[in-house]
Amino acid sequence: MGTTISGETTAPIEEGPTNAALQARREAAVPRGLGISLPVFAAKAQGSEVTDVEGKRYIDFGGGIAVLNTGHLHPKVKAAVQAQLENFSHTCIQVTPYESYIRLAERLNAIAPVRGPAKTIFLTTGAEAVENAVKIARAHTGRPGVIAFSGAFHGRTLLGMALTGKVVPYKVGFGPMPADIYHLPFPVAYHGKEVADTLEAIETLFKSDIDPNRIAAFIIEPVQGEGGFYQAQPELMQGLRAIADKYGILLIADEVQTGFARTGKMFAMEHTGVKADLVTMAKSLAGGFPLSAVAGTAAIMDAPNVGGLGGTYGGSPLGCAAGNAVLDVIEEEGLIERANVIGDLLVQRIKELQASNTLTGIIGDIRQVGGMVAMELVADGDASKPDPDLTRALVARAAEKGLILLSCGVRANVIRFLCPLTTSDALVNEGMDKLAEALRECVAERAAH
Image (cartoon, rainbow, N blue to C red; front, side, top):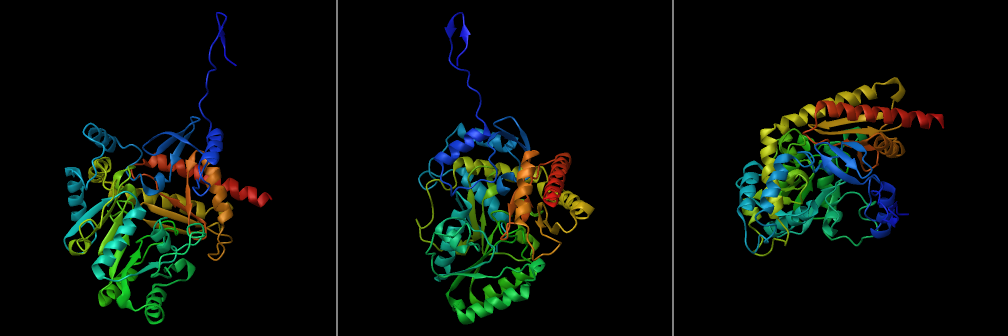
């Protein structure tokens, strides 16, 4: 009903949208295949905090799935994009190019963990970067085969999901998959899978399924993202590098989730002592603006013919402006070292929970590579007893308390921490207080039932 003023009825006063109302609209308008972690709709975000449409504040431990290493709307990134908007938003790099693209490529060429002089092409999404890396590898080697790993995530495009090492939900119902894709077991000591087993599996694959001279590339995440934050051991990477060199195979490092200071290095490959031939990048490359890249050894990158690479929106002017600003922020604010400080603080707090009498046997493993941290939830302290139900309950309860958490893992029992690297110690501790309270409540409620 409207209100009456001097005998006249005015239009109804509209209230802001609620999360429930927006969720209902989403379910009616958007296909169910686009899943969401929380039915909470963002209205504003700054730094490491998000405010929803109902005015509730959240501490963000998800960082847009590793997109916001520099935080939401970092002032320098925002200013760079605003300045670019004063000039132009799009021309298409293949029509009339622009300096910011070249400058960002030059900067990445200087730091990319690849062998020899490098070149870089910019695209839009991580999956697009992966697709182009495979195209470049095939063009350079003249071979079709690609070897990926169990638990890997390389995107939801047809080739990306074929490379991804998890069937549900990424592959089910979408077959047939592209040919000449092979998977090897990813070594996870916590689950009894050793590096030697993986290296042996490679030789078995070469004997039973495909001639190594038909393999174009290995593709591997230096730290698995969706798979559970398991780190590829230096000896694994060294073994892959040796096998690749023996047979003329390329090594593609998928740094989409691990790049740009997240692991306490600019790139996670720097922890392994090994350089790749091609590296895929995206997520935190542009601080929240769509931009991805493939960087690689110049001679390899030049293999495709003119016109064989590209895309209408690839390397957008706004993305390149943001990317250059992100590199400035990482350097000026010391975010590489900050990743280690945040990671150490998170691990300290998780270990305190792990040692708590009321949570005995709940946190089975804690993993850290710089600011890329995970805790694996199990029953009775047994690695063979994943607890996905508790994991789901914890994510939901934490959200009720104003904390955004992300889960992952092939067994859906891993909580991953991807706080912006600009997060203060005080905010990290506040978030961990919320997590501790939520976890204790979930465990107590289950025990009561």
